[in-house]
Length: 498
Image (cartoon, rainbow, N blue to C red):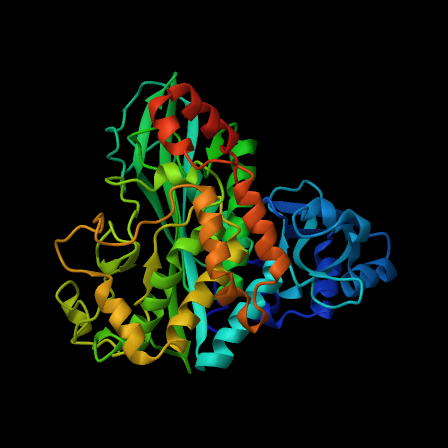
């Protein structure tokens, strides 16, 4: 059996013994009949970043065939009010068979499928974030000959009544074990359910942030994924948030992905790791060092970093997190193993031999020169992001760097580099936007790069820009820093963002 299939937690992959990408309509129908599935749920993201659901009762085989083939129509203006006019609002939602999974929360046996949006002519809806990401991935491969892969680090706080027992040390929760970390078992259940939906998880752990307030304990956790094709990476993050929220609700816990909860405590980010692949080889590394292609891609991210916040930081509270001394970036720069920079090059096992000293019986196994573990990490986004727009924006940025002349790109990369021991919080670098309004201004300035090759539709860019400006938050961060009442009001408004 394919090693990528063996031991899969997704019931359909295990049942058919083949990757999810190979699932067909016939497979879906066979599974439904064999497993006694009674309902089908269509699921899709909307403009608010949350999963929306349409339930179907399986009346008979003919009806099942119809919905799996033709999908259903929905009101696009309610799902995407910034992109779809009420006067011409009908869209089709059509299931993608490769995304099928059994709903782990439903009492009635239910099969879920993520959907794509089509317009009235049966063509992909041009302002669908999922379709935008598809166009971005295609344009990247057409331009560079490589495929763009990504994965996310999903951070969140779990909130519950404080029992006063085994209190954690304030802001020292990183990789803590129970009983000082209270929600490790909850996180492990989340990971198991996410895997059932098809999520490829790398690991999970408690994070830095923890504190008590008003009789409640707030504990930060993180679930990190494995690199995979960028479209699948976005799907997995979308479903992961859905799983975590549903499981928390069923257990009487509260969960927030909000970028900031209170002043002086760690905020939650959605760091995105990226790599470029060709013929199964990781193009981020050459001869044990960061490759020229990787540096050129980083140059693209340095160039578009201020406008990427328009996709990755969609609430005023997002900009309360992007302040110095909180392991969140403020300057447009990059560096190796440095958590104060915007783009970090993490450790990548780039040495000549494996870690044989820890297990000498394995001998001196060499690592390949194109180590698949090497990625680069964008640290500005948070979970208020539209995951598909964000991934598309990063894909465009890396392609933009690779489409520059090599000399220009490498010069930008050299100029923005922060050396070992240096801080990324340095005024010599351009600063990230400090508000939604400033982010919108940068998006307007750089929109042509995103719209090139037809990746982002003009009406999507206009919709994102208008939504950001509607917050009218040019001076909100400085006001909230002086007014705790205002800070708490803004935090509550974005508590369930994304």
